[in-house]
Length: 398
Image 1: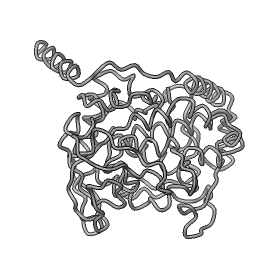
Image 2: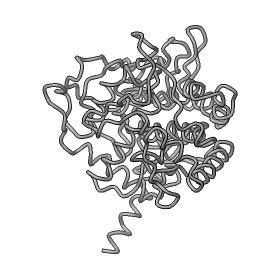
Image 3: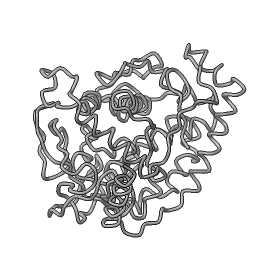
Image 4: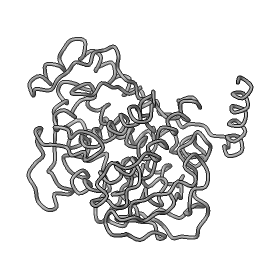
């Protein structure tokens, strides 16, 4: 038995060596220091009861203490065994039967598809709206719970610190195509530049990928639910929720990260005047895509278009891309750092309406609104998603 284990380890190392070139993470000292300071602030607010008092005012339970906190860690810092176990659990969800109504979502074939369908269904309300940060916090928490409760995963959702891989994403442990990565580049397929912004400005120059992903743990994995607003020229939209089996496509861009995802971007987001003025600023900063005349890749947009292709370029279907989860772990972490710069003061802040870009015009989101989770988990009252240590949550980032 021991010899078999050694053989598996040896084969794993060989597989990694065959696809991984020399890679050095870019420094992320600035945002990491801000995260450490926020964690200290949060621990103090838990110890002295100031955060509990603020949550109590809105009737939000706060039973999570300084001990027993679940810890979400950066993906590249996990051991090989931890990465493999995380991926195993994701593939377990991909192998479980769907729980959605097949009449409503005929394209769903797996439990994993349930999460894709929920994101598609809610997209008009959960992007560029007052729901963006809070809905996605609940959504990725539900995914984490499904991994743990339905697929016996013992860990917690990792996050991808964009700054670490900004200089060389294609050779990074996130996407180097090794068994412990979250995928590899697609095979080369001639294609044009990708349009990553609503303004259609700053298209992403084509790289050496574009085709199906044939390396990494999800090689051969098929998507099931039809594309909605694809940006890949190889994919067309289908009837909503219909069955459209196709491969995952990547065209990893180093250039995009080198310009838009360095640690200085995260630091600016967390320290500039707009963000410090309130949640409207930090939320707009994370989702920033520029204007009709000047494009900008905010960190939310970057994380999806770093691999471009399909489904990552389709913001309705984007959870079909396994990188989605650790990317949105980082989005939640950025908000978490900002919140815990002033834990009690910022816990209940909310800004924005109930529809994307306020189209059609809608009322402002409120703390009593319901965040719809469909079949991925229980619906969440907005105010119960405000804090990572309030309501049913009890987690931190390290």
